Image 1 (cartoon, rainbow, N blue to C red):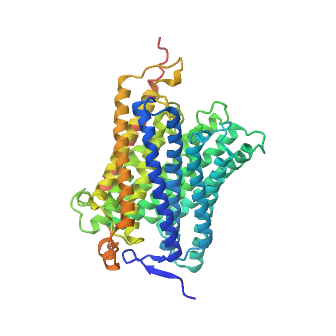
Image 2: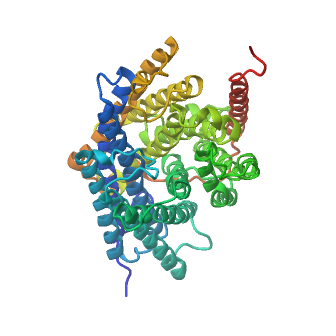
Image 3: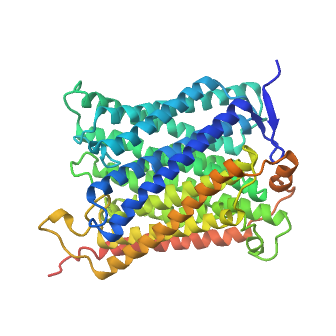
Length: 561
């Protein structure tokens, strides 16, 4: 029987099967809808921080924080990642999607869970728990049920990915070795299994507890299992983001990694060490549950297994860009290729900004915050929020936006509307998010501004309230400017994406091929410029790490009167 081949993409040569293509579209569009909701709910949280609780009440702040966190950090990201898994398993591996019915069941379960959490967040103030709903805080049973529904739906999506992977392997549809993008998606899927199982271990007992079927839950046990889900989800994002980076390098300039073997090793290092980063949420745990020996080994040695993987990718992806551009003839001097790069292409600029901002903001701050001593100053301050603005927002979300500029013409076969706005959008979003992230980290580390607190300056009427120095107000103003710029950039992305779907010009195969054809040039080119840039990055990384430890040493002068 002939394979249900729908069509061959005229730009990439990928085989697009109808079931997989439809599911990719539905998951991606749903992701953008929840992204818009997340953008809208960030407005009250930013106004509360910048203008105070007199403008936005603490109650509205907590409601907005709850809904912003779930819509942005979970729903937008995971719906898009499921779309990415289906695209990698079917289109890249040239195989029909396994169990489409199960995939649709997973989609509707995820959607039901996401809609229920949004409803509860607007209708029931008891659900305004922080994104870390630690026991003994108790939400209504429907909240835990909604989380479980969403998680089960995501697990079904991962199972469909593995089933399609097995079908492709059995049919030998991809040659001697799995394509690198599919290997990256496999890494993300494996991490998703451990993350979602950890979430089930946390939220199913909490659901039974909220119903009164369990008398109590151990808070420390729950906190440990929760962070296997909460931080583990960000490791899935990391693997998916890096996978998108490799795809964008190929789509934008025909760039390929200097060594596929080394890039695969880097993904494997994620599997070995990335989830150990979850421990940084527990390093200041006062109960002594984590021994000093375990803490030292984890933060001083084991966590750097994953750091090494990220450093390999941090070299390989820019090197892929340089190789692709040099082979196109832009090889003059050390950085001639960089000057001649297609900066007006929003997919390319989103890729470059995502790599840079993730590395300099999210990556460096994550390694620093993950060390035991520096964590004492970072933990539960606004600096933690600044860190994940540099990872999951400036890194992952910007990368997903970049690949969307290719999914729109290649899958939906629509010409991108408002091309000038599309070219500006990654810069507006990325640079605004950079300013937001930097000011948050400074406010948290230098002044101890707390995270997730609706009365930053009044301290809820506490007798221990104090005044922050004037620099804090100036930094909050800059934080507001960064937040406004990134919000405008985010809304611009939604406008371009939705506008393209509704009013974009239908593209013929010839038009798609003429504009988006992937051209990989034969030959080899040494990434001399990236070698130099990598040394600069490592130097800045070292100085940043040492500065933070010097700054920590000034916090409590020994022997001072």
